[in-house]
Length: 432
Length: 152
Image (cartoon, rainbow over all chains, first blue to last red; front, side):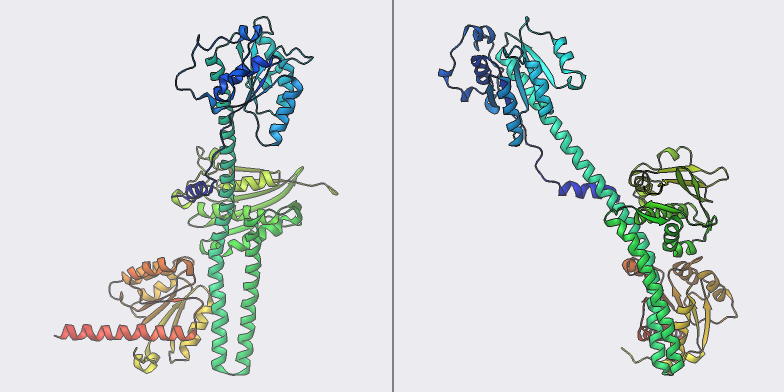
């Protein structure tokens, strides 16, 4: 199993178990209290007492008696939590209050002709600016505004947030609209919730890939430390046995030399390791210094695999950026180049100023990248190394260069053969 | 454990081949073995050069102490080459490595190719000497047993 897949699995196990809670809160706005209560009675028959249903002539006209169209079988209408208000002001209050209480309404039924200075359409427009997640179902009569008018008044941006129902309506219609709209609200929340989890998992993957690069370098650091400690221990023991002052002095010199080398390896390793932990604010630096740091980390592996590094005339190349992250980018790119040349080869590094960019080119003498693979190499999870690669190396380089540094990362085949990676980093003007 | 020392294995006559890309480490091994009576050494910075000594029929090699991680031919490849040699496949071989995290895997792999002992860097002189004697003594006993078996 790839590291990536394992991480996604682990991440899944870490997630809070509960999905977003279904929302069954419905707001009913009608200037005729009887109609509002009538709709509430349809949605939750248990909570409205029989005495609260005097029917005005208008409500009789609006609500078709239950006996005419019985509710669909199997409905549990009382699943809804309904609030009835009669004025636009009360509606805005209710929605604002509900949001503040973290008990938002999933949807509302709105009478179009509210009688007041604000009609139902204008009210919904205002409510959507308070709570853009809410759905609206307009209850219209033929003499009220047409569906097209509602559409043009609410605007294109809200076209998926409303529906309508004609008077006289049936109980089944109200129930079904209520259900559809609340389900839609739930689905959107679930989608948001899943997207959040996905982006968290993605972050974790990127973090892990950074740590993998650290681990790879760590192995070569371990090797060098093994050797250096052998120098220290070996020389110390030999000096103890020889017991002559010049021999001891010589041994101490060698021990100190090994310790200095070890300390500088450790320092470089810490630089790289820092990038796995957190991003630091950009700081001024010399690009060649960053490149050299990455090259030093690769030194052992390059030596072992006969990789020769050629650098264009190094000069001071000042830049503003995150050094840890850039060292990591270069280490990743050098490793890719090295893997592309299993029998050894050359890596050419050039840096030049190409306003408004500083351009760093890393060109290897390997076989280049097959044309069909080229467009996909920076995709996360793409790998040609089979089980050996998690496929995040280049995608994380791209992220560091393009998102963290607002630069560009281009991968291409060089005209003279081999793969070339060009990194463009923005030059910062003085005082910026 | 038997008390093994230089006289048991006649150290002064034996030729030890030391393979490591780090000259300082080769030097430390040489110096350490000198203190216990060894006098004849061959040195190589990688498996390829070391293999030339083994392939030379006129060159005596009684013990190989070899680093695992080296450029060109690494320790394991060299070990395989020695073990597949027609007449010299039983030269005692001590593998040296610094990769502690992968140790288990390496020991398993090395054991398959009949490494006689392994040493983890950094090592103490005492460990090096003890392993050298142990490996040489075991090789001597094996030869004696084989001669007896052949004579029966």
